[in-house]
Length: 401
Image (cartoon, rainbow, N blue to C red; front, side, top):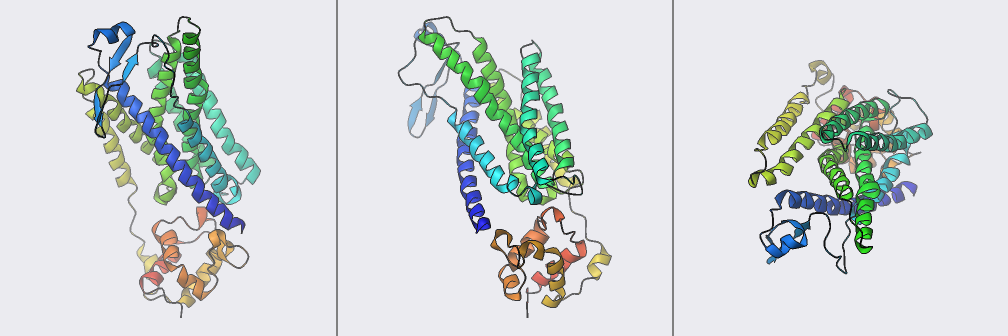
């Protein structure tokens, strides 16, 4: 029953997490586009009000005219929309999903004993520390050098080094699947922390100053803009890390830490193209196509690097052309019954009878042979010859009689 309830919790939390993430990423991308596409106002009245940029757009059958004030509007409107619950809801639902999917069964999902043979409690503590320590170091970098004239470049370089170090460490401490997700959660936590600790507090100080009739300090807007820009470059790396758990050929590679770094860097480069292309269309910067080219070239390089090798002829020859259930059953008993037998039924799946194996034949083939997700972290040390045996059993009819 616990497994059944956890599965439902995972499904519902994943649903909420995806919905809120779409709302957050969508609004973030829109405002980056908006900032990059604003042009100086033409109307003299707008100039007198302190408007620094405007945009005319058409969508859904209507025309829209958003404007941006240089520091603050002359007076606040009665209704002011705040963009923060998209961020908070995404983080809260994501952390809850991470807890249900990984922390709750840390012994199975976080720990790879060939890397670190620690207790579940220690693994959970280390995973949570990743979220906190990365934010503290990244935030410290922004505080110390972020306000310098050349601060953006230095912050970017130091943050890149920090992400690379964290990726290497995660992939050497945790099971590959969990390591990728943990790095994504680490970056996403910093994104939401940027909103919680800097962007929204700065905006609240501006609003309070306007209401009190006091001068508005432009530093709050500058800091908020800086952290918002950082968030937009984190977005594509985070999305890759979150989606990678469905593709074991990435996180199961011997140099999985390098795979993760290259894929995240490619995502950031592609995002740079989209950030700059709006300014390029207005003549503000050079053609950013080189960034897209760099990102795509890196993706193609990783694809070539990770291409699967042909199975060894000896291993293939050792497997009979036709595999019966009698040939298959000892492999299932040794490699699968531990989690899918009479004592434990992970995901409500049992494989300790011919009928059950027939019922789940497609899933066994998909999880063990195609995606190679199972056995989880290869905890039962299944061999390539045994995977080949399962493949031939399925492809020749998956007979159990």
